[in-house]
Image (cartoon, rainbow, N blue to C red; front, side):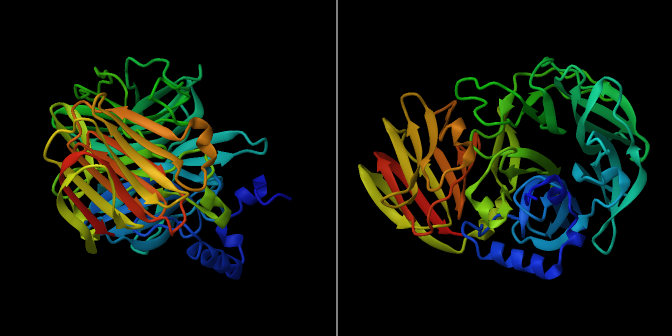
Length: 486
């Protein structure tokens, strides 16, 4: 029997010998490319962030977790808490797929606060004897012992007429004393959409209808929807599957982005919006989820990874991570993403901090895990290249061309290849204004890039040797460069 047979993928963790699992955890802990400052799984596969919510002084953040290997199988929800978005405490598996409606996995969902307690709503995944899928939407409550109590039978037990069983990922919020949730869906004609439900109490839910957009045939499934209003603008985030590449857009196996427009006048479903825009032009970003901080900031966390993708770390029985928390802002009608201000607490030591009048190519530091902040004081005439995690055989490029305002992330020589390299090793975007600010977070096997104070963002996995540490700059510029060990 193959280790990843159907039986192996849907074997509960409770059936595994404790000593065997302890050995797996030790193997993972000692494996290469483990992250220094990102959330990562203790074993197995991490994917979608779930249940992101703040309550009583703490953030609660869960993620999809298959504990027994780097593949999609019987999904749990793994739980973390933090008071500052920097120090995350391991609370263990909180949602266990051990009831009939979620017998084949606790799929994605969201968190919300009701009656001064943390609640969740998620998709239960069940397969019958013929392996036919049945999904339902289940409400639960976080107990004092850290486990989630499920309220069964499911709140939405069946898929509405006109849709397939690809009906999942409820995101819940409250407006004018009414609870609402959006659910990602696939119509019977195999096109994607988002469906709206409402409830007076977050237990009994009624379908309102589809969110009406101008995208009637935009991929075959819309996953992980999220709706919110920010600075008077309505935003619908979702992950459309099945889009064809379009120049520099839609280059990954599946995409993640948003449409924005006039806020939806609930309970109506009409959404007057603009074009779909990608949230991240990098290689490895998916399934984002947002929440509000206690002071009203809209925060986002995503999955550093993609479905249907194999990574070099898989051979060590683990895969993927979560992005650093990002704050969303609207400036001039544009959605900007920047690292949450709390992340400055990650800085341990200043490696380099200087005003530079730079020409040519120079090495300015050796660093494996770091933050770099580049602020230009004079517009670039030609361009600029940053080279990180470099050695004779390996290097990752961030290039900017001033003539075309093109920003490029190139991982062609970044170390061991990712299986999705068939989708290319270069990603590009065009900035709306000349580059004036660049911020990088580089971990043991990832890069998160923020250009022009959040106008463009890119996330990527890279797999260099730990000895590839050179950081170089090429080009003519005036400005300040700061590098911090993280």
